[in-house]
Image (tube, rainbow, N blue to C red):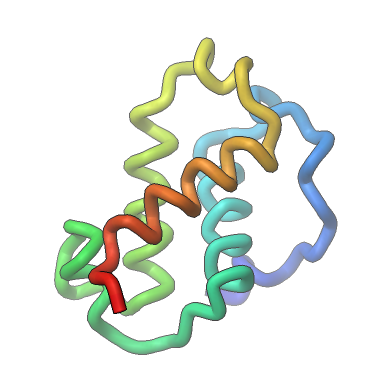
Length: 99
């Protein structure tokens, strides 16, 4: 997962349609991990509905990839990176138990 943290450049102005699904997923995942201070370990997979073999960082990446794949290219035209991230972050937090 070293590539996940390789770039610290803000992505606010980059067109979402100019990125591949993998690039967008990696950037969104990195932002979630940093912003929410997600720790390495196990357990998030159970709340995110991904395979239990995934450690937290990979579980988040796989969950984000599923969300990105569910969006159409037309839907991406309606979002900036920041808007997409904040919607995704809100949805992510609602997947976790309150507490």
